Length: 174
Image 1 (tube, rainbow, N blue to C red):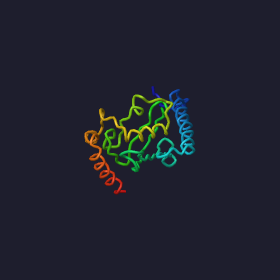
Image 2 (image 1 turned 90 degrees about the vertical axis):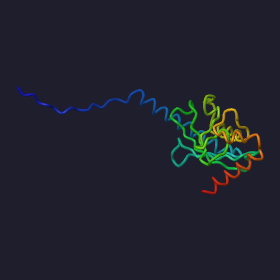
Image 3 (image 1 turned 45 degrees about the vertical axis):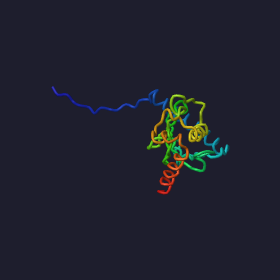
Image 4 (image 1 turned 180 degrees about the horizontal axis):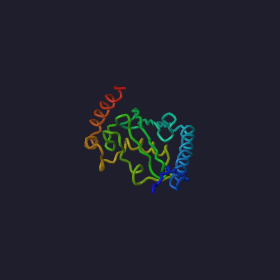
């Protein structure tokens, strides 16, 4: 007795609920980010700006300028990466311009409560950038990412010397 082998066929299945949710979630993120882009373009908040990095709406390049105080006149670039769960989960924000600060590590990661456990879906890009701008002159030295910067913070004269030296070094490389 001989058995014949027939080629197996592949069946086409409908997308799973998970796939549908991901598409829907991605569309919601896109809509939200488009609204935030329009808000950023019309609001003209002093010292902050942010725009998509090319055509990728989930990756933005931002700029903040230091306000009155020790960071006044210094300009920093940041990267903002949005996940499919935005605005229900905070985006990942990092400094791309090296920033000497108690709450910023050497890789540009930021320790800021609203980017971690205090995040709310009501926050938006301007809220994030204004919070980081405010953090520059008001660090949380009890929870530093950069211990050297934290240790120097109380001596503002010495801190500013080191800050300006590191800033000049970082920005002259470009």
